[in-house]
Length: 267
Image 1: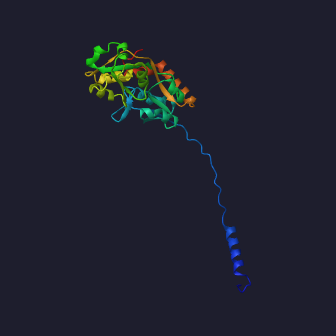
Image 2: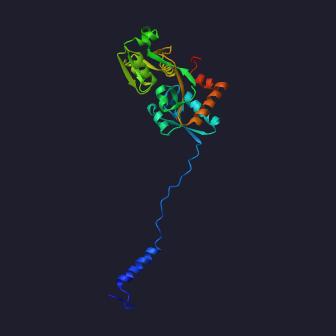
Image 3: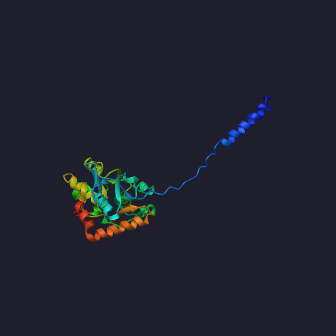
């Protein structure tokens, strides 16, 4: 069929389709645009807040040795600090996955941990100690008596204390894994455990809060060094933190903070 002009409908349709196609704007090509990395003006610090006096929560605020350290860092590094409370067993993963930049939580330097992260220079040399019921003082007069005891021993899981007890307490009747240090007080009083092994600062703090019921053997079972954890690739940050620690050791800032929370620490 043709119009009066002599053009068939099919030809007319093709002409219109060609016109519309020519007028349609081309489909934009997707391009990947590199965005500049945000300026690193905030240092994100992870703390467990469950290890007094190193780091703990009080009246809605993180307190302790590490908290005092963290709040002095802005004036040293020229950057703001954000403290994030993270469960102890998630600290290293949080650092590696870049949710935080520094672990400041009374962490002991160990070879297994050094496989995954780097540490600053140590800021405190300490060790593991033992707490027990006040009535059992005569049972545990020495480190040898503690290690050879067939006692039930409490430790916080995934800590140096757990590894130490498993290796050095061959006569323990059982090992009870706790989630937090302060759980040990109830476990001792309830006679579910006979001994609690943990870092010396924590043992001192627990005894000071519960001296009517528990006491400690004031001799370290080993020697440990506490430091801050950073990612292995963050060498610049680690160097900056080491410079800060060297400065604090020289000007007395380090001792002033440690003395506030650990007045009876060995020096």
